[in-house]
Amino acid sequence: MWNDLEEYIIKLCNENSAKTNKKTKLVEIGVGKFQTISNHLKENENIELIMTDIDPANEDVIKDDVFNPNMKIYANTDIILSIRPPSEMQDAIMKIRDELDCTLIIKPLFNEDLSIKTSKLRLKNYNRASFYIYLKE
Image (cartoon, rainbow, N blue to C red; front, top):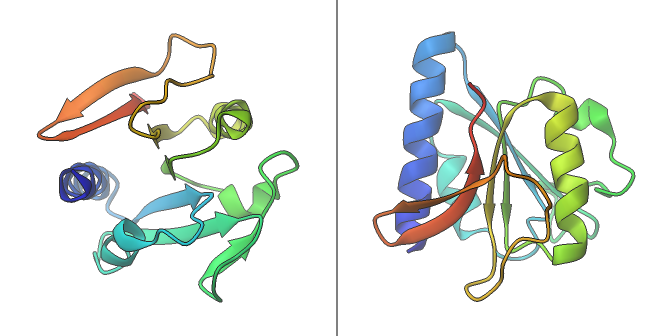
């Protein structure tokens, strides 16, 4: 499942980079200690990866609070990614997305629905991965 999510994100970033002739800026919010996907994404030449968390696990992660975000971190973001964000964070992530007008991908816990009250996010099944996405047109 994780490989399929990673494959979809890389495909999306590569398509965006081909359209814009620049790296796709992807910000992963609430990265925590699960950095398997992030470690692979940052190897892609078409992706500029920024990882944020309230409690950074290492020096590669920028300290940020989604409830009081430093919007300078998110400037010119093309895609926001959040893997297993707690339900209380989801509306705050959506507010950041709305301010930036970018694509948003949320992969909730396996048995969890989103708490976000919007019709903008759609369930996407890509191979064995299921996640919610709001694609910027």
